[in-house]
Length: 199
Image 1: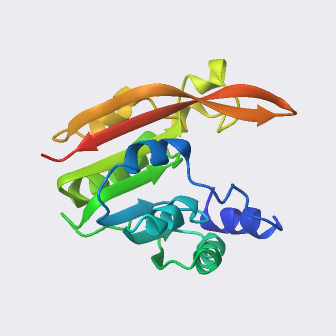
Image 2: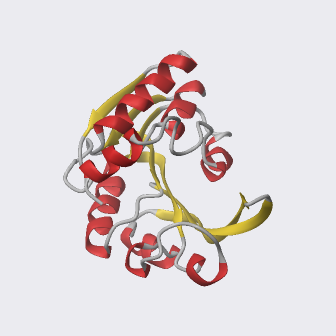
């Protein structure tokens, strides 16, 4: 999907397309960290960026949908926090090298060559002692989970993400179960979760 398609998707929804609450794996990995500078690449409507700001992080959020960014701004106003918002395509946007203590990529699904570029930028953007956190629908979700993209070419695996973060120390790389409610019953979605640290 291009930015116009996402703009239409966001604009057609009277409420947030996604929840205003942060992703559970973001909370798990970040809650115990000392706040610093963070960047949320492909931030969507800003739920993770706003939560990070609430925890005391200095946050930059990047997404190619102006409608999503405006929704993120509104969420930040409602939560009384400041986020530095940027409308940009993360496949061409280059964050400052060694600029962040946390680089977050959550549910960004692109063909292999494009996600490799984004992960390379993330690897270069993280400072010594900082982490890159990648969360997304796992390839195994097609057969063993629910929801998410149905195109195997844009789904993640822990191995494919870790490969693109070479040079960082992999602290966590797993296919994780995420309970979701579908038509009144709880089922699992399968997500890739990778945490990589720059020494």
